[in-house]
Image 1: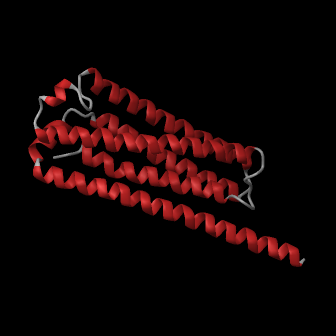
Image 2: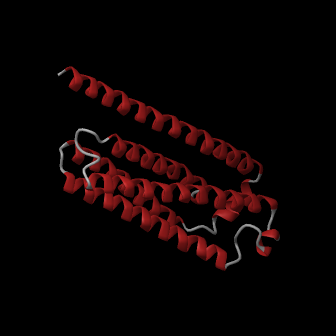
Image 3: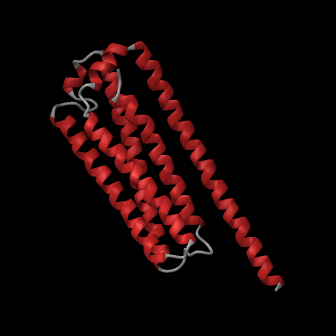
Amino acid sequence: MENQVHIQAHDHYDHEGSKLGMWLFIFTEFLLFGGLFITYAVYKYMNPVAFHMAAEELSVTVGAINTVILLVSSATIAMSISAMQYNDVKLTKRLLLATILLAIVFLVNKYFEWGAKISHGIYPGSEQLMEVSRGELLFYGLYFFMTGLHALHIIIGVVFIAVVYFKVANGTVHAERYVLLENSGLYWHLVDAIWIFLFPLFYLIT
């Protein structure tokens, strides 16, 4: 009985420590993107017309679709945690797969969006960008760097969630011990929150 209590206490501290570590990681990520958002705001203030003109080259429709995709994916991973709490492993796995699928659709949309820009000669270091104003050059530099960094976070998230999926499937993550699933959800909500800022900054400039 004493050993069981000791194990439960150990699991509790492991659980809390793991979640605290994830929250600290999320905090550092917000600091990183917060710095980029401030940089963007400063350059936009200095080059309002150029930023507006450059933003007109982006597709608001594609950006809006990707926003909806990420919002839905945040819902599916949140529901997967609820399903695990009810010990519904089958539903948990389906919801995790849905989250991964939505993430892949987001990346495919981003691939075609970037591909369209590159095909028109709009990419870092291109001759066409060398001919535009300094403000437009700054806009596209920030656009490719910030959305590219976000896409990298999406890829990492897909790998993370896939690992969680297989751990759910083999029983390592279960209704009594699902902190890894919770952490994957926290990470994915971070990815979603970052995009919620990126979308209006780049696609809805007025």
